[in-house]
Image 1 (cartoon, one colour):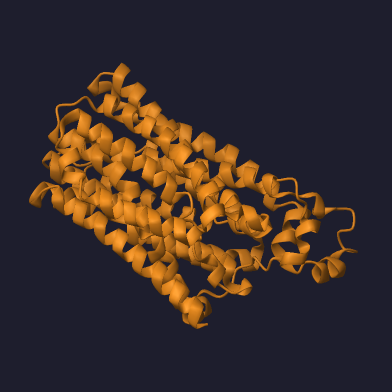
Image 2 (cartoon, rainbow, N blue to C red):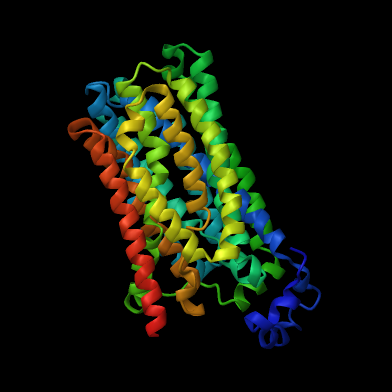
Length: 448
């Protein structure tokens, strides 16, 4: 934790760069920057993004079917809302590519400011949207545009800090520092879930659907503003700029990236597929299932999910300790096998009344924490230094798209038409893909 970059320079080859650039920025002693400082920016940035993410996800279940698709039966309305939910994941890679070009031309600060500005406008814009009853199908079109804007902005907001954190972390604590950014997911869910549970418990259905649901989007906009300044304070300083330059954490041409590193992109996306599939199968999907097919109060179910998110946070922290002891690939592989085992119990637990549902949520969140804690950049070391910045961003985009983007839509569609057993098969397929990708990655390493 207290190791300075000068102590780690031998592992990263910093000395030659430092000597060359020292006269230009001699008044800045970037060797005093420690990994814990970078971790603060990573946690703040990710927590704000995940809060936005879960506010929209919960609204897709609790609000949008009634507000934007009132003409459709409840199931179809929820499926339509999940289609629009997936638009952000489709847009993320395009946002990453476009904003990488902006960074090459105008710099990192301009890119990050523009991306988070678009994210804030898109999120706040949803809060002010007229409903279907007000303007008809134009409301659905506007919602789709703003959702795409969120995806483009999230893709463009990649700041390189997670990669910088991984490179600057002590060799024996790589797993510990890798999990810090992942803590943003449970933190974001706990805040968003608590907010929605409170409103559902204290507002009438009419008030909630009329104006109450808009409040979390206002909060998300305010959090984005705070996060913007916190992250800019880091990436705009000369010390951090020099660190990012020295680590070669700069954008590269996307076409060149895909043509030369396509194999690593695919393996990296599939290696974490089990984690990303489970992500939505314990957060968004079960909430939609309870709302549609259970008489259980939704607010009380969200409370259980918030408790589960607390267990997830503990699991994320534990994953850092486990990965440093046994290795990140071993940790991910073991968790993928456990997720495969959990997939067999999805039908019995979700159909097992409140007790069974609670067990599934708490167990699923706990396992998600252990797995997701090491999912980010699981095989990022495969990328040469020149491609690591862009490769880490695109790998994350592809993992979200393949593993999570359509998970609520597929899971709800399968379960409502064919039964919950098919949700278990869907989760199992993600675990199998992860195990296959990790095995392939190991085989390629041994061959090379």
